[in-house]
Amino acid sequence: MKLGDDRIRHLSHLIVDRLYNDDLVDFPHDDHEPALRAIKRILRTYCEIDERAQDAARRKITSQSKMVVQGSREWDILYDKYLEEELNRHLPK
Image 1 (cartoon, rainbow, N blue to C red):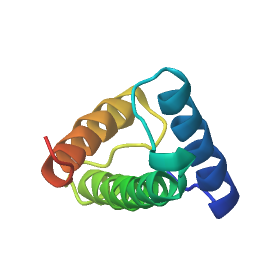
Image 2: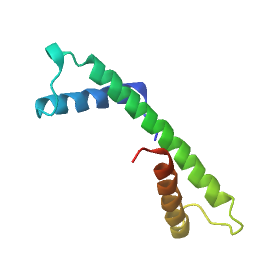
Image 3: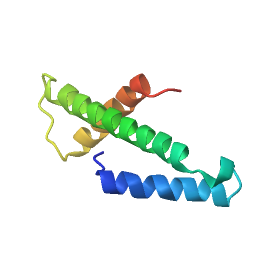
């Protein structure tokens, strides 16, 4: 998943605002900056992991001896399976 800096900044502000407005976290002196930086870092890291997992899933499918046509039902099933395996391998549980 590719997200630009503007999208990441926007999402991080939405997340921080929601956490604060729902009283799920309290920020000292209404200082949201450390939380914004942490959320931006987490979103960037997740996007990088997701992109690597998608690439790995595609490589696994194309490296099979049987040719699987991209866009077919079989491709979609294998892609979902391999993507989930890759994400489980790289994301914390």
